[in-house]
View 1 (cartoon, rainbow, N blue to C red):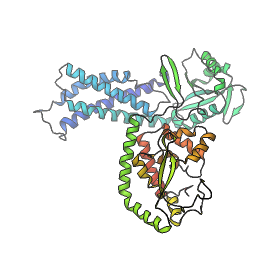
View 2 (view 1 turned 120 degrees about the vertical axis):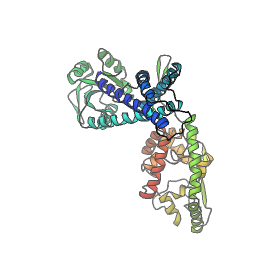
View 3 (view 1 turned 45 degrees about the vertical axis):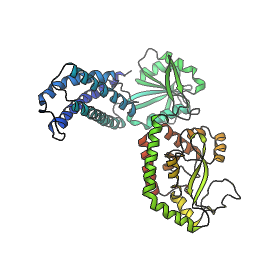
View 4 (view 1 turned 30 degrees about the vertical axis):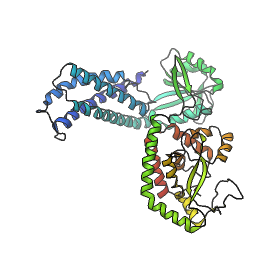
Length: 467
C-alpha cells in the first residue's frame, strides 16, 4: 500500500514517466524515419503528423500499462532492481498494447521499426528520469527535507542494528523517534526508549509516526501479535525485521505456498541461466587472460626454475563447489620440502620456506596466475570465495557457523573478500561475511567490478596479509 504522503511522489513519477514515454516515441520516429541514419525501403515515410496523432493513444495506454505493472508502488524502502523490473514489465505491456490496437484499427501509422526502437528508448528514458528523481530526493532527505518518523519495537541487538541502518541510510528520510520496550525513559546510544508496547497508539499519535519496525528476538515473537492488535486500526506501515541471520547463511526469501508464507533461510540463486552466464564469462575471460598474459607466464616460469630446484608448478588439493576437492595450480613459491616437518600450516610473514622469487610472487599474487587453467577446466571460477585446503575446511566447518555456505558456489581466483583486504592470515569470520555477501548479491556486473578492483589492487595498492 502507498501511504498518503507518497501521493505527490507518485504523481511526480507518473508525470515524468509519461514525458519520457512521449520523448521515446518521438525519438523512435525521428531515428527511423527522419534522420536518414537508417535506409528507408518504402516509397514514402509516413508524415510526422501521423506520429503526433498517435501519441495520445500511446500515452493513454502508458497510464494503464504502468499502473497495471505496479510502477507506482512507491515506498521509502524501494530497491532499484525491483523498480527496474516493474519498468521493464510496464514498457513491455505498453508496447504490446500499442502494437495490437494500432494494427487492429488499421492505423495509417504503423512502422514496425519505430515500435522496435520505442521499447529501449522508453526503458532508458524512464529509468534515467527515475534515477535522477531519486538522487535529488535523496539529497533533499539527507539535508532534513521530506522526513518521516519511525518507532522501533525492541531494544536488543536487532533493534539497535535497525536504528543504525536507518540512520546511515539518510536518503530514505526515515528518522527514528525511539525504541518501544520495557523500562521507558532510558537511552540506548542516542535513541531514547519512549514507552512500552502498550503505549504504541499514544506514541504514534504524539510523534506522527508513519513506520513501525518490529525488531524483537525470536524468543519474543509472541509479542508481534500484540503489536499488530494495538495498531490494527491505523494505516501505518508495519515491518517485521526477521531475527534469522544467525541461522541463515544466504539471503532470506519469501514464498506463498497455498496461502502460507514460507521463509527460505538458505536458498542459492546460482542455478539455471545464472550458472550458464557465469561459466561463459569464465571461459571467455580466462582464455583471453591466458593469451594476453602468456609472455609473463613464460617469464615467471623461467625465473621459478632458475631460482631453486624443483618443478615450476605446484599442485595443491583445495575445495571448491559443494566442498569437492580439486588440484589447484600455482607457481611454486616455496622449497619442495616446505611441509615435510610441519604439515599443513598457514603461511606466515617473512616465511623462511619461500624461495627468493617466491616471496615476490606471493606478495604480488602473481603465483596465482596458473589458476586460469583451473578456471578454464571448470574447477574454479574467476570470482568467488577463495578455495581452502580440505584439512582446514574440516576444521572450520565445525567451529565457524555457516562456513560451508561459501561452498554453494565454485571457488574463485579472486573474490569480494580479497579486494576488501580480507585474505591470507586475516579474520576468517570477516572473510566469510564478505563471501556470503558476494554469493547473495551476485550478478555479472558484480563479477566485472571485482575483477577490475583486483587489477587495481595488484597494481596500485600494497597487499596486506599477502605473504
